[in-house]
Length: 502
Image (tube, rainbow, N blue to C red):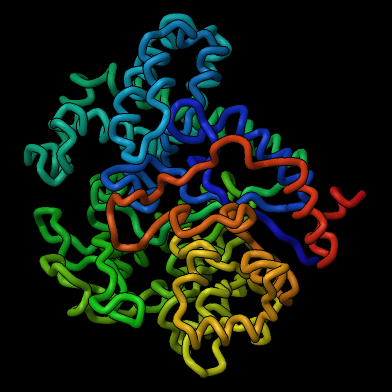
């Protein structure tokens, strides 16, 4: 069964307190998706963002982003006053490109809500909270302590903390838990509220025939509770400093490569317990999302390792990954989990063989298809059914931005191949081409339905600032006319869900 969906991160929803949240506008977007004949809402990673605001550089592989918590819902819960000065001030400071100031205000409000919660929560609510803490103990205890310590040490990376707690000496951990108990409890409350709001939204989406398509970064951030709590699982030296870090080698798009800087996994160590850490992560993701995209899938077959001290990705080397040993362990312990492999970039026959053996759908990106004269695998006539097709992802330019940047010859090739016309427009032609492909699933960025230019691009890889991760809806774009137009497309290409069609 063919289907379709829209890529729009939660933060890109319209919101009166800086960015989109899990509140009213998220529910309205679910309604819009249903009316538009869509089956999937694709979002980006939902973890707490750190320096650079990237959802792919999170303080935790498990925690939710406090910035996405809806404050009006906390007002309804009686945990914040509608007259609160900080809430009113935040509402006036509505347009944030840098999340740092937004986080400052929101953090103050969430701490107020936490204090009210512990003072006023009923026995039933406290039981729900305690059950949440128990069920998530395997990551929540480390994360809450990590965040409390981060504030205690003035927000510096954990690698700069005092040696006793940086290296998790038993007495130091016990001492800090006792000293920072109130702050630890606050961070646990914040996670309780995040997942209460998120799971309620997911339930609403699922009841309306909309599946949540989530995103799992392959790597975790150096400045994360995951690495601080599990240093033995990563390529670190005895002082917990990275020896090699992740990235991509130089290519036609990036002459010096991409230096991501994430520590790399010690796959030999992970194999000793049957990849328990990864199995747990995939299991957790399958509870949060109906479908999960694993970022940089080729990194499981072999991965690019760059010396930690290098400033570019030019001097890296390819090292062997776990390949099917990991995915066999996942299937053995979890059964068939719905995953999508982000198989973009430099692919070898071994990577293709791993993807085929795993059986997960790969990805097609139309914007990659028209460079050079070779028969690109990204051209639609080469697609297979078991795949997900995009015009571009969050890391690519919008359709119009991409088309306008092409040289004359490439533009002519793209125009001829897709039979683009002025009447249909660039976006219309690319969307039609994607929808008419054989791929089981087509995902279109919201920006392309809105026919927006390069200024609406979500992210430029390997850059910080410059408007990355800041784009969001203004609030008047999701019209009945647009919904009708999208629904017509879904119906024409037999991608409309039966539950909607009926």
